[in-house]
Every structure is written in C-alpha cells, then in structure tokens.
Image (tube, rainbow, N blue to C red; front, side, top):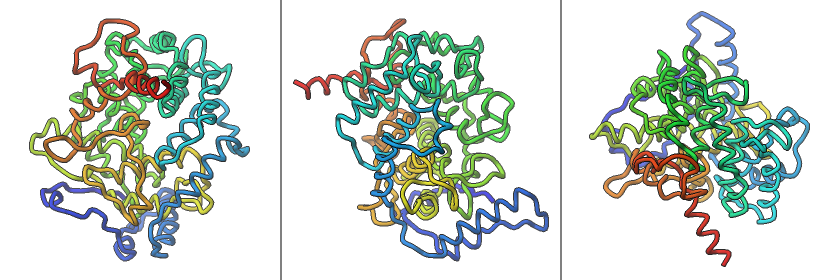
Length: 449
C-alpha cells in the first residue's frame, strides 16, 4: 500500500522529471489483500477503485485555476452552513483563502484586504494573541492563522495590527516547564502548539531563547520508533505532527536533534503506490491535505541533508513529485472549483489550501517538475517553513535548496520590527532564521510617499 523510493546517483542524471504514469503502470499497484480481508483493506480497495476510474479516463492533467479562484473569492463573502462548525476558526478561513489565492497567483482589491485586516483586528485579544473570532479567547492555532494572513496581505495596516508585546506575553503564558506549549490557557499540549508558537515568534521577531528553553528537547521526544513525530511523546507518528516537529526544529536551529534517516524512511513510505498522494499515518487512506503536511517536509529534509552530507546533491525532492501532481490534478479537483481530500468527497477550503500547497511543493524542486502544460498548471512557489513566503531553491554555487539558503532567505524577508521586544539580540546565525518583516514595511512606506 505504500510507496518507497530508493535513492541512487542515477536519479541526478534525469533531465526531465515530468513523466506521467500510464494506466497500466498504475494498475499494477493495486492492493493485494493476500486472503486477509479487513476493514482497512476494504476501505483501501474502495479508495483505489475511485482513483482508478479517474486515471482510466486518461485525461490531460489541467489545473482549473479560474474555478478555484471563483470559489475562493465567493467564500470570502459567503459560506454555506457546513462551515458553521468553524465559527471558532474564522482566522483560519481567512488564511486558507488568502494563501490559496496567493498560490494561484491571484490578488484581491485593496479594499478587500483592508476589510480582512479589520476583521482580524477584532479577533485580537487584549491579553495578546488572536481568538477564533471577535470576543473569543486567544488560542495558538488562530493566532498562527491570523499572523500569517496579515503577512500575506503585507501592508502597513496589516502589520501594525499585531500587538507584539501582547503576543510575547501570550506565548509566555502558554509555555510549560518542559518547553512544550498549550494551545490555549489550560488547554491541550501537543506539537502543534510548539510549531504555532515558534512560527509566529520568528515571524514577528519576538523570539527569545528564554521563551523556547527546553523546547527542542521536548520536540525530539515526540519522534517515534517509526521515524515520524507524534503529537506528544509516546503517541503515534502522524503527517501533520511530523511537519510541525521538523519545521519547529528548523526554526529553532536544532535539526541535529532529529533522526533524519528514520524520518525519511517513514515519510517516503507514506506516499501511496497507486494513488500517488500521501496518507497521514501507516495503513490509512490517501488524503489531499497530506500533499503538504507530508510533502512539505521534503524540502526541509533536502536542506538538512545538503548541510550534513557534503556529497548530497539532487535537483529533485526525495519523493515522486509527478505522481503527487497526478493525484492532485486528476483526483482532487472538484468540477465546480475547490479541491477535495479524495474522489467522491465534498470540496472545502481547508483541502483546497493544502492540496494547492502540496502542488506548489511538488512543482518547485530545485529543477522545476511540472506535469501538463506549464503555462496553465504552474503555481507560485511557497516557503516550506512558513507557507506565506516563497523561498529560493537554488544557491550561488550549485542547484538545490540548503539549510543555509533558508537562513539567508529568512534574514532578508520582511519583518514587523527591527528591534526586539525583549532580551538581547541573538547571534547572527540564530537570529537570521527569523522572518524580518521590517524591510517590507519600509518598501510599503516608500510606495505610499
């Protein structure tokens, strides 16, 4: 049921990474129950049949960009009743829509951006951080979504919304003695909280060593015997948690604490042999959102290996980028716009966002790999650590993303404020991985003059 890539030097010699599998090739990968039918195999075979129906049509993979854009813009104004359950996640809706539009190369009118900024300002708590809606208690998840949404908008009005001192105190109030973070006051503790906290701290430049003392050791304890990361120490490895754990260690500058070979072995085996997409856990079904939560880890692993293994050199990520694009473009696009988790499922903004994010990752390796017509299917590059920014995937000396190139990019990406809120400035290496938003603010000021 799983897909595994064995790395060898011949892979570097491939000039064209845009091979599309034939139906015959895909058909060979059907699950063999070996005479042991279980609930898991029944669901897996059903999912494979739905995917095979679409692959058998042999359609050209085409990104229906205009339909997705239309749905996203409509969703800014009106959502159907199925989204009522996300009333406490409204900043996420803003982020998913804005991020998806960015990937598709689409922008909004200034007035629309301003309205979103005004709404997110109402979600900010007097105690610091953002709640899931106006008047709601602050929570790390909508705080991450709100800060990233404001950074995507990137105007003076957007940046000045964020109460950085309040944000720092909010983050500090959620920190446990072991370095882990609660999602909200007296809330659950898991690795999502760590990622949300370190991400917004780096984005807004309120990071201090004291705020994340012991955090890297706690993250390392979450890596499981399988190689992935669980939500907490002792839990099962999961795609979303694995991304949060690895990205957090990158932001903390502590990737040496991650067992990269074990993580790589686990994560390449999460790509499904037949479907081409990723599953979130062992023996689970394919899901479009893991196109990013699993796929987004590969550029980070690539960067770490480029630093640690002097001979490592590849123009492509260590997974089948073309198979993932096939799954997204042929199996996940809803006829009326938006993307789904798998065929015969309903579309939603969440899966639209993360399937498109995975498509961006799959296309934008050091040497781009785009299936179908590039002038139609190419999407914008995203940054694999903070998805609201693009990252350079080449260095001046040779192709390929490196950990140092991530650092260089972060040190020149805009920042909310040059001066730190608390504490002394960190060393150059430690500080440079933070997103510096101030330079963009100066560009905004110059445009307004």
